[in-house]
Length: 205
Length: 205
DNA sequence: TTTGTTTTTAACCAAATGGTTAAACTGAAT
DNA sequence: ATTCAGTTTAACCATTTGGTTAAAAACAAA
Image (cartoon, rainbow over all chains, first blue to last red; front, side):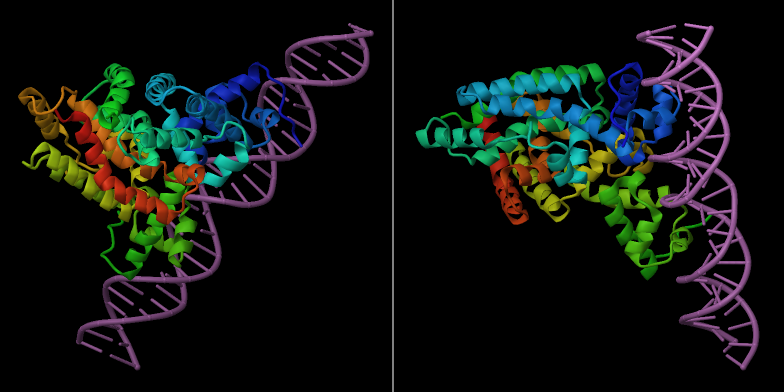
């Protein structure tokens, strides 16, 4: 059994190259030779440092999952008021996705490919998204009468949808509306306030 | 040059099988032998009926694109009032996606893979999404003062996000919230009214 | 300088892959 | 029954692919 080699220049080079290639080509589409070329190394080194293609991919997936889900949990489970939570989530989540705009598409691709594997086995128990605290909080606010009656799941879906989907649809949006990258970034910056405002306008009594 | 064979039993079988395999595995991940197995035919027949893997894929893509974009255009370009348009879009779009729940993920995958190819070359000029009429309508309503000031693009993104993203995130939603397929369908049925209501509550003066 | 360990290289491997080929089969028309 | 055209089959092909192997190179310690 090949153990993972300790962190070195070459190992890091491989990871950086693998990330680039996997993100564009996906796991099936990515070729080990392409990754080696991208890293500027001999292909056999990939196998010296990583057991096989799948293991290499899992390392990348785990690294990326760490940027996608923890935000969800830390904010959802905090004791902040609901509206503040929505504002905070939109702002911080969009910041994270602005820094990693490929991330939603990458995560959704893997999760759709094999949910149990990627949300189960590979990730294990840590850092799994857990919406229950927020759902309960929404329910409580509805009961208190501070917001209009809305299903907690529906509200959660609205929030996630508006924060995440634009990054997935980015190439389509850019092409059909005729925006460039910078304009898209600005648009998403605006959404940090626009989304919470839109939501709060809708649900506030 | 192999012309596409005229529509026959075998041709249809291939298309049905190809759709299944391409949808799950994507283009790179799908194997011609897998498609042949799924269709219950000899692999060489794939090449008798379709020039190559790429051409077969394009046929499938075009078929699926016909379910994804035309709704967008017909409703966006109609002369209906804005609120009616939003209601109609949400209802009809969600109906279409309920019938083809894999479709958003499939389309977004291809568009992210190579936007110019899939939104350009393969689709040609027909049936391309064209949001400009709706954007202009939103702008007009803002100016008339019937809705609160909102950027047309932002409102469009909100509408599309809330209608489309849940289908993309379906496996994640099901797993993390603990729903089954039927419950998800019900949830999306509710969204046919919930989304327009949510939006109208937010923007109406 | 020598020795031992680690890293890198280039050649190699078996299997998989998309595609080709020619013969056999099938169905329709004469 | 024969001929022709279209469809299907099974074998085959060249290339690609992920991975293996052993030797060379590099590095570190004594």
